Image 1 (spheres, rainbow, N blue to C red):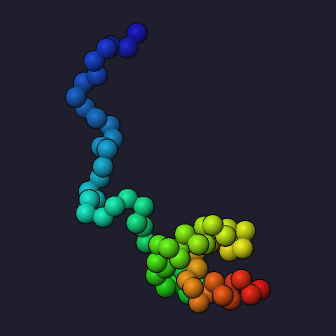
Image 2: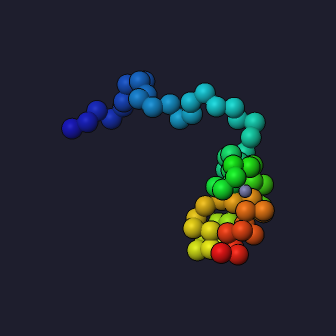
Length: 69
Ligand SMILES: [Zn+2]
C-alpha cells in the first residue's frame, strides 16, 4: 500500500528554465528546403496540405516548387 501523502520531493519540475513571454506553440518554423523562417500562417498552410508537402514546412517560395513537382 502506498502512503496517502507523498514527500515534498518532486521528481520532475513542471517547467524548466524557459522564458514565458511567448505563447506556446510559437516554435521555430523553418522551411524544410531553404531553412528560411516560415510565418505561422504559412506553416499552417503546409500542415493543412500535408499530403502535398509530405508533412514538412516550406516557405512560400519553396511551396511553389514543391507543389509544381
Ligand atoms: Zn524555402
